[in-house]
Length: 401
Image (cartoon, rainbow, N blue to C red):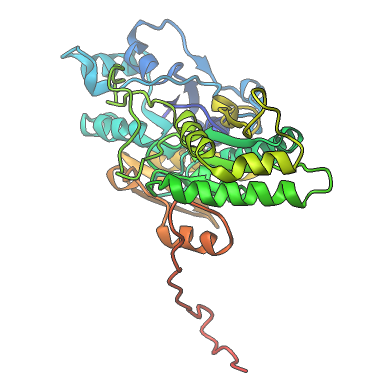
């Protein structure tokens, strides 16, 4: 094993530069060389036509800040098996042979992982370093913690605008199939409601929760100011469990169509109920806000920070996990272990799992949702009582008083 190619694929997020740096430095420590294959799987497919790759020498690695999000290697959303070229795998092998690359370290999420499994079955030596800001893989993945922190910061900061203008703020964030980052980021910032794909939304329940809080805060304020904050994952489902998909859009190479806009949908549902609520006019009048024909109901404003939630800086958790995952991936390829996903590298022990198992989607546990419902967060349904079990893991009997 002499030369390692490093690929990052899928969406950008925090921790990817950690993977690149951890893999490259570990390769150097073993007397190997590491090379960037630019632009994800598009670059891999076109490798045979690329004249020269960037070698990750010690000086070049020095120029990659582990604390920055994004990827120095560049990403793309290309599924190799969907390429209309019957010789695509041979073309990739020719490209690897041209640049004398013995194995690949590939970092990405479930779509990327499915390609890793595909490449491994075609005899291409590769290891998967898990990456997804959605946290929906079966193992921790770089990007999740950074995104959760950015969501929490945005919700916290937007509260100042909401309170200044007496607005209800609806912030839409990523999370098409799983709502981990919306869930964790929302509750960490004291959001009043968090709407996730796992819990179909009853908008009547959501509205009662939000309008009661909103009215009380403003009425109780000595300056008649208040806000309510809602975090919604883009994969929101309505009460029937239907995803809000634009069926006129063209699917990408992984079969995903564009979503229609969960935030706007929530705003419309709330506005319709505000207009029909007899309490609202009296509330606006009593708090000195009502101006007939000009300002008769509270504003519900959608905020969609989009890629601001996955760019910028990497959290310490993602930076260190990225370094560990990259290093572990090189350790595995150096030992001839391919077609697997890194799970962890701690205390001198590397744990890994089959890629097909790692990329199975993991969803928010409804038992966790029930806990936060008891703490006052609405998930757009009638709150449920959590089922709680207690387990002593120390082996020492607990004192009972």
